[in-house]
Amino acid sequence: MATSTIGERVYRRLLRLYPRDFADDYADEMARLYRDRVRGEGPASVWLALLADLVCTAPREQISTLVQDVRHAWRTWRRTSVLALAAILTLSLGVGANTAVFSVVHGVLLRQLPYPDADRLVEVFEDNSRAGGGPFFRVSLLNYLSWVERAQSFEALAAFNGRDFTLTEHGDPERIFGSAVTASLFKVLGIAPIVGRSLTAEDENPGAAPVAVLAESLWARAFGRDPAVIGRTITLNGVRHQIIGIVPTAFREIGRTQIGSAGAGQIFIPLSMDVAQNRGNHTLRVVGRLRRQVSLDQARDDMRRLAARMEAEFPATNRNWSVWIERPQYSMFDPRVRVSLLMLLGAVGVVLLIGCANVANLVLARAMGRQRELAVRAALGARPARLARQLLTENVSLAVVSGVCGLVVAGVSMQALRTIVPATIPRVDEIRLDGTVLLFGLFITTACGVIFGFAPAMRGARASLMPAPRRMARVRSVRRTNCGDTAS
Image (tube, rainbow, N blue to C red):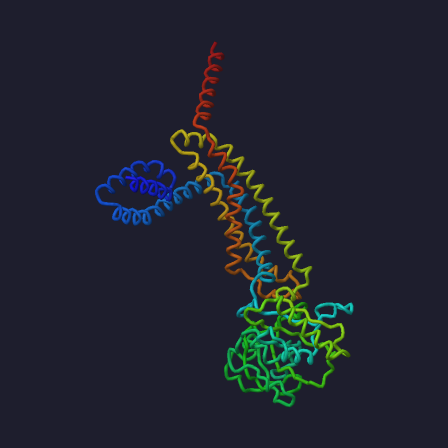
C-alpha cells in the first residue's frame, strides 16, 4: 500500500510535464486510472506503459498549446499593427546593434585562436623594466638560441620578424608583406602545409638554397590554386626562391606583432641563423608552445631563473634584462583597445534596455485596454497562469520577429563595422556572424521578450472574475437612469 501511494505521488509530479490546464483538469482522473491499473496489472508493466505514453504525449500537448498561443498572439498583434511595427522597429535596431558589436568583441577579443591547443601558446619577450624600459621588448637572436637550448617549459620555441617583399614574377612588381620565420614555427602553431613541405632546420643555415612558402590566399590569387606550383621559382627582392609549400591562412605571425600590422603575411622564408650578430641586438618576435602540465606561472618562473643565469654569463649585454611571458590573446592588444570595445558593448546594451523599457510601456498600455477581454476569459475558466502564459507568448513572439529583423540588421551592418574598425586592430578579419554570435542574438532576443513582457503578463494574470461585468452593469444602470430622467 505504501509503495502504491509513493508511486502515485511520483506519477502526479510527472503529470506536471503536461500543460498546466491539462494537468489540473485531468490529474485526478489519471491518478484514479493509475491506481486501477496498478491493482490489476502490477507496477512494473504499468510504469513502462506510463513512461512511454508520457514521452509521446507530453511534448505533443506542450507543442499544441504553444501553437495555439502563437496563433492567438498573431491575431492579437494584427489588430494593433501600428504598435507592433513600432515595437519591432525599436527592438530590431537594439538587437541588431548589440549583435553587431558583440560580433566585433567576440571576433577580436573572445574567439579562441585557430590553432590546436591554443591555450598552450605564449609569446616570450625580453623584459627591461629594471632599467626603466618595458616588459615587451623584442628578443636577440643569440638569446633566443640560448633559450632553445636551455628552457625546460616549452615543447618548442619559434622566432620570426616581418619583411616586405617585392614580387617581380607576374607583370608589374608587387609589394607583398611576409615574414622570415624559423622552421619550428610550424610545430609551435601546430599547422602543416596544405601542399608541399614545411621549412626545415637545414633551410635556415647560411648558404642554403633560397626557398619560400606561400600563404593560401596568395596561392589562390596569383597561381589559381595550381598544385604544380611546388618546385617552381619566384623572384623576391631580386633573388630567385623555390616554392616548397603552401600554408593555410591561420599560419601567420601572432602576438604583439599584430598591433598595427598591415595584414597577414603572404610569403614566408627561412630566418637566417647568423650567430655573428651582437647579443644586444633585439629584433625578433618569439612564440612558444608550453609543455603539457606546465602552467603559465611555472614557465615564467623557469624563464626568469634562466634569464638570471644568462645575466651573470653575459653581463655586457644582458645586465638588467629578464624575460616576460604572456598569452597572445593579451599581448596582441593595447589594453585601451580591450577597454574601449567592452565599453562600447556595454553602451549598446544600455541602449537596448532603454528600448525594452519603451516597448514595455507600449505593451503595458495595450494590456490595460484589454482588461475586459482578460476578465471575460477569466470568467470563462481561464486560470491566472494560463493568462500569463498567453500574454508572455504574445510578447516573446513579437521579440522573436524583432530578433530575426535584428540579425538581418547586424548582417547588413557587418560590412560597415569592418570599415569603421581600424585595420590596425588585430583579428579584424575574424569578425563574422558565427554560431556563437547567433546564439548571443537568440539570447538577447528571448531576454527582451521576457523583460518587456513580464509586467503585462503578471498584470493580466491578476485579471479578476468580476470587475469587468460589474463595470458593465454599472454602465447599464447609469444609462437606464439617464434615460429615465430624460423621459420625465
